[in-house]
Image (cartoon, rainbow, N blue to C red):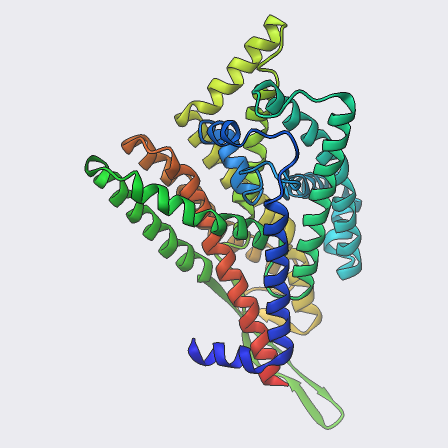
Length: 421
């Protein structure tokens, strides 16, 4: 590890890329520290701490709700827009063809549609958030001009963070959006540790030990499952061109146990947040029907058993969904056949695609069960020891470890490329 760190310092191009990423993350934290006018900091802090929904929203927005900053929505609308576009690929074959078959140009156009969808989603979410905060007296009452101005500021902040994320991704040092979420999680660690130290009581020692054990299990599990893969042996036939013989080599096709990474967790939480948001939005409604709907949604979200079951199922489903979108066994089979290769013991073409599909389903089952179990494990510990911070801490830890693994892999790939050159 020390040798690789020295190689990074010696390589000017790679060093510039890493420094650029760090500068962008610092810029993100600066934007997260500038509050909008008219905020009561104490009311905001107590409101977020006492509301599980907004606590989770704060984590997945990168910690920008702590002081209701200019980028108060974080990257949430962009994540929601990406989810909607991914779902639409299952409905409209043209979008699926654009994403999977048109190469890099098609994916760029697909991502552009996700960015355009982010703007109306950010306007809608900012309006709902502002209404909730005004009703909770976190914000001073706003005029029509005040609502419009804050909505524009929040939308511009989301677009700004989306732009920063895209710049980071272009450098090839990790996924930009994931790194922004990671930066928000890491920025909140000193405060969480300080609160845990000063609020420690001897009676809570078993709870803290249980949380440390859960954290260790999450870290070890994420590393093991993240690195695990199933190797499919591939044999390439010999081809004679002129006086030369090509091919005739044996290799393997690596299928990762967890093809989707941390994306299913982010997708699942983004969807789960909507019932709580709607319930909080309708909380101040005068209509008794809307009031009852609001109470039902809030109670449903606060029911830990129901929340855990829905969370597990959604993570499980999104793992299969995202794997199906990003990995096409038929396309892989066609590419292998075009290059003169075949899976040992399997006929090229349709039978190879069916074989890859069957293997992918089996290993994805393991990955989906693992992600679902890791996601609800902190909920189980929380219900046993009654510490509300464990849920957010466990989810944050899962995201942080996955993002670190992904970023380290990309940096190692960059080092291998420079060493090869």
